[in-house]
Amino acid sequence: MPDATIEKIVLIGAGNVGTHLALRFKAQGLVPLQVFSRKITKARKLGKAIGTAYCNQLESIIPDASIYILAIHDGAIGELAQKLSQYIHEKALVVHTSGATPSTVIKKHFKNYGVFYPLQTFSINRKANFNEIPICIDAPRVALRKKLEQLGKILGPKVQRVSDKERAILHVAAVFVNNFTNQFYTIADTILTKENITFELLKPLIQETARKIEKDKPEDMQTGPAIRGDQATIARHLEYLEKFPEYKKLYALVSKSIIKEHS
Image (tube, rainbow, N blue to C red; front, side):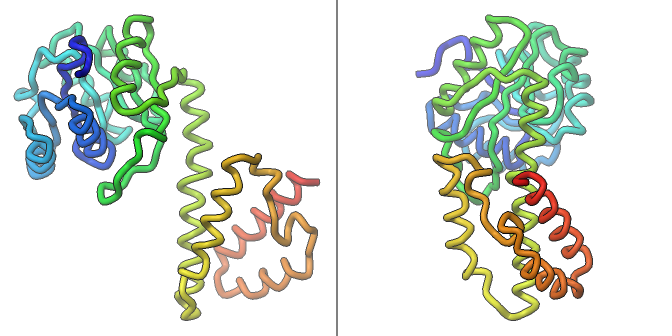
């Protein structure tokens, strides 16, 4: 069973992150006391999924929980923390799950604050493997950090203290490896669809590219025409991409970056 000091949790947010956290907590024997979402349909769906109370009004929030987890979009954290401070106990520990937002947006409203950031991309229709997900935590005092470490280890074994500065840098890097990479997948899919070629043909390549960096540094695994200095192939690719001007710019820019990194 979870430690008694972290049993009283309220989860604020029923989107991708909030849903995965709620389901994992339940699976591990820690059911949040309540879930909140501004949309009652989302609050109800998640509350019923884990068998707990739910609401969509801050005045209905349970006021004496131990930890409040703000699993909401970055732009809403500061405003919601300010409003939440009117309804809950001032000694509550309030944390957010954002990779990019500093913890200080909560500090303005709560003495006990911190960050509880699962470093992963979440989609509601895909099960998350929390045994592999880093849980990045931080708080201003040792006792609070220990509490967040305990909470994180209920989700999975990979819990690590990461400062605001480090987390912000991590988030920049995460955008490159996840969001930008997925955009390149989208571009490839768009090109192939227009040419009536199936994207399925690229999936083994995508999977092998990911497997390569499990044990080796990315820079050592780089292949392709740019690193080989194959200007003839690059020129042919750029000629083809004339019909996709924005993609041509990206191709040229990334090729230039590869050449510079490996020169």
